[in-house]
Amino acid sequence: MKLKALLVVLITVCFLLSVTDAEAQKRGGKRYQQAITINPVTLIWDQVIITYEHQTGKFNTFTVQGLLWAPGGGWTGYGIGGSYRWYLMNLFNDKKIPIQGFSVGPVLGIIQYNWDGEGIFSDYGGTSIGIGGEAAYKFVFSDFVVEPKFQIFLNVSSVTGNPAWNSFTIGCNVGYAW
Image 1 (spheres, rainbow, N blue to C red):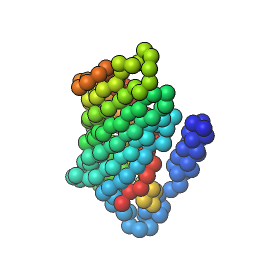
Image 2: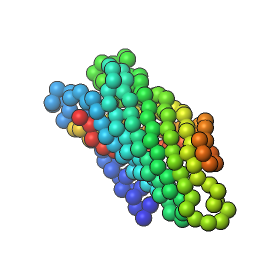
Image 3: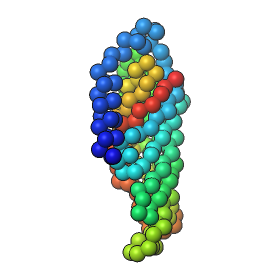
Image 4: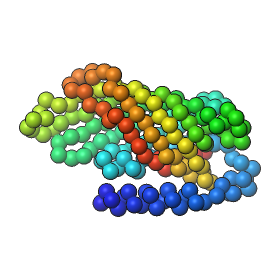
């Protein structure tokens, strides 16, 4: 099942990357200020990550992310996070504004995770805070978003329980921009 989902995502991304941006040029180069996306690649790890992005300045945006993790076997988790992005190519080329192109920025997240089973993990669970950075490149095709991205986190505090944090997240967000 996971392999089928990954193949569908890869085929979709390849198709979308092969499409030109001619439609946007016909409409006078629409300028996008918001986007909502989901990262289907993380479904491999039984995670759902949804991201909302909003433009804050000529070269900047902020994001808010929600995470749900349910791999089964007794583990569950959820979290919230966010980032602040600088769209570097836009500093040199005003044809694109935030929500399109290459971006980098800091990331902050909080995750709550639980072990509901028995055995050696019975004392696991808690809340962790992570900070890190991200790099992404967002393509927008007629309001449809494709965004390969990479995030790296460092667990800086375990509020309760044992520390647990993904050291990195890779993926390719897909969604809608307006």
